[in-house]
Image 1 (tube, rainbow, N blue to C red):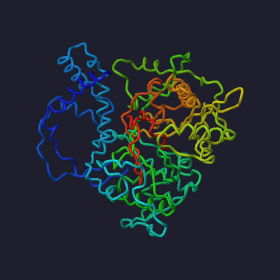
Image 2: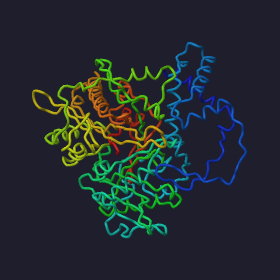
Image 3: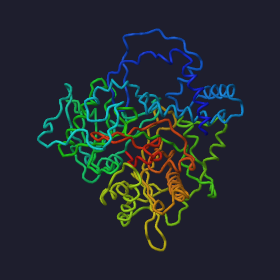
Image 4: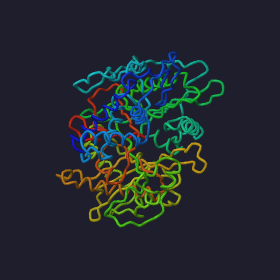
Length: 564
């Protein structure tokens, strides 16, 4: 879309936004009592101002935020206005161009802190009372010129020695992830109370195998798996976890903690347990001499270092490339439509949609095979070199590479059926050069299903998530200019999609990070409505390229960290 077309569309959008007084002077947001699990619980406001009647255009524009799709009525309105003011033949009257412009508005709203995933996270900058006390860049503050810590490290003696106090009737509990009973407790808590979509239709379902894989990397500390129990019956009602990693941010390398799985029971979200959990896990981490952390959230907190977008393959069959001969098979598009995870576009029937997303039955790359123990050293070397392409990324030891890509392969003593073993969490494949035995490429993805809430027919959405990958095509001079790297990644991830399809996944998800932006469109990924914000604790750095370019770095290539 040309800049002139974009300007014409933006003019109409701006006019539409200002077409109603209520758009320029909105009514107050409900008072916010607390924030938990990436969601905000509103309390009734004492003042009830009279609502002004919105114009039709303003009402439709308001529907942009918090919806999976831009309303067709709004697109038609903008197209008609552009045609009336600039003529019917201008490129700006193209519906797809208008849709893209409106989608970009949604993205910028999140980046500017106006909304989070699907419109959540609308706290004003001054309302982040907890985060205002923490060593993080504050919203609206000018970024520092130099990277570095915000607060200096402390000696162990300077760190608080006692646990933070909890509200009456609750007590701290360190979880033992080696204990199957305690893993089950964490699983139950997350399955019933963790992140779900805005319509409360889907909720992540973390298996015991997944939790063991995610929470027990080499060097993990039991004390960083922190729970809160009811004192009277010992029921687990809250949880937060940390795992160690070595992180590189631009030219700086330091030990850090990856914070994840902050969850509080739905019935206890007025107890303000989340801030206490964060402070307690921070204390435990500080006691080990680590003072930096990385974490993600769908809401806008002070202050994202980068924002990436969820992109969702309409079905794993999206990996088929046009140059590949198709071997047709039935796909599960009907399930995704049935559970309202996706929809049939206006210009398509369900039958045609199934045909469009059919794919070949077998991977296409020569030399592709499942990763084995003997490949650990070669994969580690390839991974280390490839990750230097991105502004921020993890640095892994051989043991960490072995854990991340091999430990979650499931029960190896049982036969694999349709590319899936019982209990399998992660899939890792390498490409071995025939003549030399050299590993030239690898890719990985992991399984994280979601419970389908209150659906009469389907109870589980099988979702695969793109994990890490690397190709030595990146190290050939001119590979990006002549698109050779792009083509190689299309082939690699295309085979990942084929394998995921054979393993009976319903959907394959990815983020706009690493080199993903180069192949998402060609592999028929569709844009999701979620934005994921990346945060660094006690570390300042200029914004990193994520959903958009930053500091001369192309979109996606600022972030090389995949958070589980």
